[in-house]
Image (cartoon, rainbow, N blue to C red; front, side, top):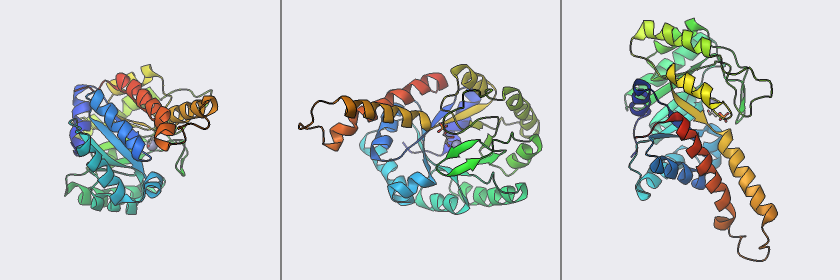
Length: 290
Ligand code: G3H
Ligand code: ZN
């Protein structure tokens, strides 16, 4: 069942768990995410980056694919179709194509411009009951060509941002896209706590935080972050690594060289199974079961 992100993320925030926001890349990836959501009875966000949307064909293709699979696979848990790290034009395109949630990522813009554009996107999206995520500070590392310097989100920026009426906020707290470096000091949980307290003073409605760069963050840090107000955890790299590892093992060890495994449905199957088990493990930590 396709729903707005606000519905499931706010309810996760109010009830002390987090929704998994899992990036998709293609048909198999989308099916894997939907099957995990259904198996775990977990409301789930399927996220598509601008790069993935381009790769898959376009905004309409992605929105239709997720909607159609949701129906054909009889998925009865809430599913959100989300634009991940969108620029201004991508956010508008996603709103028009039937996405039910958009992230407008203006974190690399001057704050005033980030706020002004976020406000515009909020007006367009809320008219259609589409949720909006925005970012202050920045997430370190690189994802699909989006590079961030890992700036810790200033409190004043976060306060100004929630006043744009967004539904959830991504704030840099030392989190990084892709693999974490060996000597990564961990999430800045003290800063998350300070942010949460400051925002609660302003809004009184417990705005949900989004944790980007979820891959490779130790379980105890994720759980503490959830207790402090994180209600959406983005995971991309972990599933990619699991897919790659399983597919590689299969190809390198498969003895059926002249057999049937050149059929892409057979060839990709071990990778797809690996995506499912990796995401399913993540959901055990987020504990968002219905
Ligand atoms: O927006 C997507 C996420 O922040 C993914 O981060 O690839 O490090 O899991 P990750
Ligand atoms: Zn991200």
